[in-house]
Structure formats: C-alpha cells, structure tokens
Length: 457
Image (cartoon, rainbow, N blue to C red; front, side, top):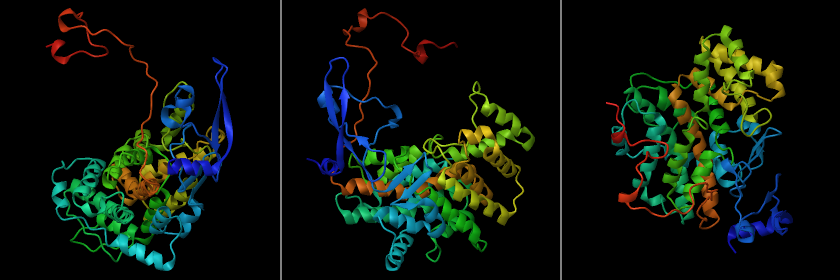
C-alpha cells in the first residue's frame, strides 16, 4: 500500500454505492472526509471495478491530491492558509511570514523569523552569467516569456539543489526560488526598457527590495514609499497561494515526473501566463481603456447584462467564489490607500472606481454576486504604482512562487509521487485498414489544406 493510500485509509469514514443501471451491479467506493468539507469519493479503483473512467473536463469535480496547505469555501467566501484567514494574514503579517507558514505549516517564532528572512535576503542575487542570458531576448519580449526561460535555466547554475530526494536540497531550492524571483522579474522589466539592472539590497524588506529593483536608477537616490511597500506586500500575500488552480496543478503534474524544482516552477509560470488565469488583471486595464470615459459605462454595463451578448466586464465574479472574494476586501482597502497617497489623476482609475460603485449597488450584480474580485483591484494598484501592464502577471508569478513551491514540497515529502496520467474519452476513428500510397483516394486533409497544394498565387 502506498503512503497516500495509507493516509486515505486513516481518513475514510463511509462508502458511496455506485449502481450500473445497464447491468444492475453495484459498486462500493470509499468516501474520504477531510478536516473541512466537501468529502471526496475515492475513485482510484473505479476502472478496475467497473471498466469505466470518470469524465470531468476542467477537473471541476475532481480532487487531484490531498493537501494541508490552503482551504477555500467559495460559497462562504473563505480562504485560509494552514487554518489562518487570509484577512488576518494580510493585515497582521508580512509576505515572508506567509512564505514560512506555507512552507512549514506554522507561523515563525521570532528566532525562526530572523533566520528565515536572512536565508531569503541572502539568496536574492543572481549568478552573474545569467545577466548574459537576458541579452538573448528581444527588448520587446513579454516579461513572462523571459521569466519562463530564466527560471528554467536556474537548474543549470544551481546543481547543489536539484536532488529532489534530499529534503535539505529541496529546502535550499525553495529559498532560492522565492528569493530570486523578484530579481528575475525586475530584470525582465529593466531589460525591456534598456535600463541598467539594479542589484538587490539586503537592508530592505522583500517588498521594498522589489520596488527598488523595478523603479530605481543608479543616477538617483530612491526612497521607498511605505504606503506603496505595504500595498505591494499585501498584493504578494493575497496572491501567495490559491489551492489547486491551473498553475499549481501544472507544477504538481510536472513534479510528478520527478522533474527538478526549477523546471516545475518554470512550467507553472507558463500556465499562469494565460489570460484566463494570471492575465486577468491585465484584461481589467484593457477593458477600462476600451470603455474610455465614464459616460460610456452604462453602454458596457448594459452589454454585460444582455444574455444575448457575449461581452463580460473583466474583474467581476470568480470561478471559485460565489460570494465576495475575501482577498478583494483587503485589496480594496489598499487600492484606496494607494490612490489617496499618490493623488493620481488617471481617467482609467476614475472609471474603475465608478464601475466598483455600480457593482456594489446594482441589483443585477449583487443578486448574481458579481462583486469586484482581486484582479480588479490589483490591476488598478499596479497601474497607479507605475507598473506597465505587461508586468502585472510577472508580479503575480513572483507572489505565487511560494505557493507552487509549498505544494511541490508537500508532494515530494510524501515519497516518490505517482506520475500524473489523466485519461480521456476517445471520440476518434475506430480501427481502419491501412492503404498504401498508390491506392489512396486523393482528397483534402480533414479541417485544413496543405499550403503548397492550395496556393492562390
């Protein structure tokens, strides 16, 4: 019996009976109860018992693993890390507190906090040869493209932390990835602007250091605004982990093949890059630009309400949360603090505040619980701080690195993982007889044509 199966035996409470109406046979499947609802039906032996697979596109009703890291109840608007409410963590801790919590399961003691902060702070530098790696990219490359490449390349520089069977090497790799990601992201931005790289400073906090590396230049002194640093810290905390989302699942799936941690995180960055995942806050700013002015808001709200129109307002509602996103409550506070501090006169930000008012008061949005989500506010904050739109997802990746690492580390600590291998519902051709080239019927290929056989020139 594997370690995961043994753990399942310990938490099994009852069985679920599955009946096949075609044959009249019944099958008992174990039901596993976690520490919070919902329980899950253990279908690992379903195929052996019934000859059937489950069909669940998007895995919306499938638990791919057991985890003790993050709990979400979308109906009630609950998000907890290791049992702690996200609101409490965002208000009362800093990002490295949350990193330690996700990695180790407990908040750090004062002594552990000092030691952990020291480890992260002194791993922020990049190997000097990596500077040359950046030169291989075009100046207009998306920061996420650069981050995928540079993070993947880390495994060629840090051979002393790629043995995934060694707990100490796993921890060193974890520290390195958390520490170096802000430097990698900041350098991607600097490279796109043709500006010199700014080395990290050991006397600054994690968030202060990120802001300095992005916005300072060698010719001027740079003083970090404490309001902006606090807002950035909250952004990092609120994006640190979110259970088994697409990018985290990608990291786990890559890790199940025994890939090194740097390759796994690079895979996660690639998944996060998608506009349906980490790119949502970029979409918010594009939407605001499309609306253009406050007097056009009713037009777009009307379109969003029209069931015959595919148009949707970006940054409202959430795939998981059917209530107010708990992260959005905290982010909303930071958003208004930043705007008040900077006094920015930006039409798009005024648009955003008017959309927020409508969503919180309009019966259509309230009844459907289409509240502003974390992406709505984070995009506004990052724009106000001066980040270009293409850096929004890179900031998300910096924040989420600890969540990816925590899940990868949790999976590896349970012993050699079973390689992920989803199955499918096959809908293609059945067996066909092979025909040699001289007797095949000449016909156009399915769905597309050979370019050299169908030129109109």
